[in-house]
Amino acid sequence: MHRILITNDDGIYSKGIRAAVEAVRDLGDVYVVAPLFQRSASGRAMTLHRPLRAKLVNVPGAKVAYGLDGTPTDCVIFALARFTDFDLVISGINLGENLSTEITVSGTASAAIEAATHGIPGIAISLEVDWKKTLGEGDGVDFSVASHFLRRMARAVLERGLPEGVDVLNVNVPMDATPETKIEVTRLARRRYRPTVEERIDPRGHPYYWVVGKRCEEFEPGTDAYALKVERKVSVTPVNIDMTAKVDFGEVAEILR
Image (cartoon, rainbow, N blue to C red; front, side):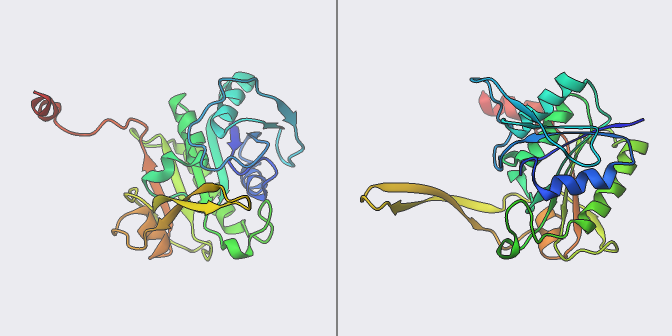
């Protein structure tokens, strides 16, 4: 029997994580460890300066489920310590897409990357949403098509594994996708947002600051952002956690000399 770990960065009460459990519950024993609260944009942060606390949560279809007051990376580490090994780690289904090299900021993608550092294949899956129509933990969001693609990909990875050199699949599903929507294997776009800081003034006249980002609207063909935003396809980006540049090391040494 396969052992599957599911986590996310939206929190254990997100409807997306319940949709993920429902999608793969008959493919193996499903364990859930996810943050107790929203931890988006936490990257691969770990909690090292205080103890972690865990709470048993009822998640239908899961063998056991814990909410952890830590980050998505903490959740993977906790699960491996508590339940030993897994055949697959799924992170998601995330509310909102995770595109471009900015997946290094994403808690969703980072949880799958953490699993990969332990030799476990990962799938990070995100669903594009209309934030004007999305409430709370995913109220009003239809996860059925994203669940369809997740089940399809999870089954394939469990049965056939990932190709050599691929550690994680970063998946993004358009909000208007159907089960017949085409899948495009892509590379990461260079960036999705151009961040800056916006200054505002509080009622007492003191400044405070928001990190905000202006979206890039033009993307190069072949990238995840182009596939999702322009072609309206399901983007699947194979990710390798070895970020060493594929260059002639001699050229780098020559520059340093």
